[in-house]
Length: 259
Image 1: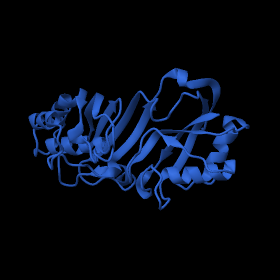
Image 2 (image 1 turned 60 degrees about the horizontal axis):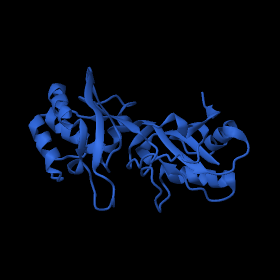
Image 3 (image 1 turned 45 degrees about the vertical axis):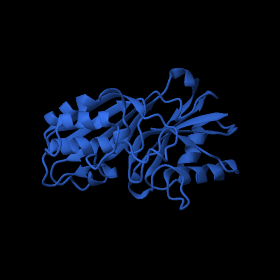
Image 4 (image 1 turned 120 degrees about the vertical axis):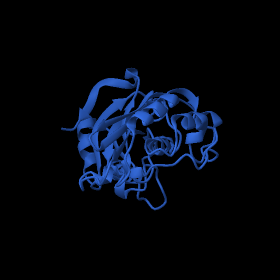
């Protein structure tokens, strides 16, 4: 039986999502908990491989196991024994055709900037710009150059290690919204290359402080070549907010969501 789960995590002290030999990733902790519950090794598959220090409120994973006690008891059992900073908040039965990564039709990320020094309770999730100030009008003008279906090789990283991943992505939204000293970069797309969102954030940051122009961003995109002009913003500002799937990938009412 296939199970689909939603998980949120504060990525500050984890070395990303994907399992690593040192065992200090979100996937590692969840798999260890599942192995205890199911009395055998369980492999989970996530919607995206967030980097070390990146957060999530809408990460999705699936696994296969003949759990006979329903989603409510599964959710309760999964949430017991996980470290602080990881919270599973929904579990449901899914179609056998569902895959957390390959069935996804849309992903939303946000990147948070703070002009000056962010309050202490925000610093883990926000990039403090200290003395820099951003021009969000220029940033949005540059963002407009990137929306659409393009080859985003210039904004990816380690493309050779990624194997056969298609660098052509459909970027459906990219915009910067300001609320006082807080600026939020919001993006939605069909998918993202390794470190692509952080590279978009770093590049638009350089537009905002005047190091690059919107036309520079357009030229970088069409070059399809990564250069030092493309900066990677720090991980702590980035959060995976949501992953969308076709409705037919669920199997009805067999779902439990925590309060």
